[in-house]
Image 1 (tube, rainbow, N blue to C red):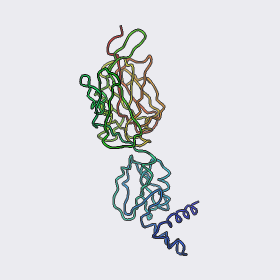
Image 2 (cartoon, rainbow, N blue to C red):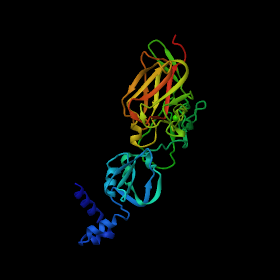
Image 3 (cartoon, rainbow, N blue to C red):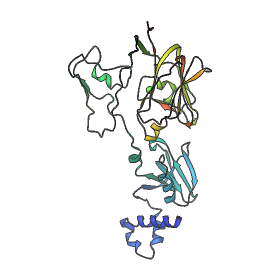
Image 4 (cartoon, helix red, strand yellow):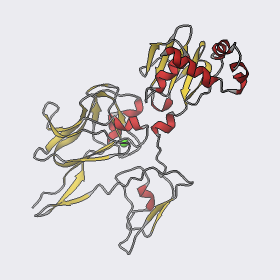
Length: 339
Ligand SMILES: [Ca+2]
């Protein structure tokens, strides 16, 4: 197996103009072995010299006999973007940091490996409408067009009542658009058979905490700051959780979760096997709903709790081992009594 892989690699490598001459001579194998110390640019990865990835929680060192085998390990792992290899130590360091954010150092005996297709196969999306110029057919109250792209789910654009009202945004240049998301107004009312129940969102800027904090910018409050571009983020751990204190007991009618809107496909899919829990104290939490998932980036998930709805705390908990991160959690409770 190893022999046949080696032959294949030699054949590919010999396609490069600078070694083509040697491929047809008896010194071919010798030439290739020497050439491994030069930079490699193949169809699937490229290398550069004297570079080692820092060892972090996102790296794994494995025994490996060649830089090609090391590249093969990285290519077989959908989360691996870069790797580094030491021939002297026969060590392959695989890095699975998000968005190729691995830090490196200069070290002579190590070589750096980067896969070519990483961005293509994971499709990193970015949101391109934020704070871009927008206009609409008319303006009601303070509902300007810019309110639909200000990143704040508590504001909204609003036209007058008219025939075919419209809103449009100028992204500034031509993009390849993959997805468009629309968030409806979050205040308002729901109708039942007998009456209309006014709901209000009660989690905004309320005290929140989580099982661990991945980095300073990813605290628990980021899930209730009204900004869809910020998110809370725990470490990878067994059953990571996030909990918000609404300040008093509310009759909860609906819980909405906005998944992160940027990152890799894998990032979005971390939101899975999620318990949505509510309770009157930390020790009396009951499961309101369970989400199997996996979610996609930017998914907007809605849950209702049925008969269990009076609560002060709302908690999200993954049942497995992973990072927990969400952009926003909205909790809608009864505003006025139903007469
Ligand atoms: Ca947020």
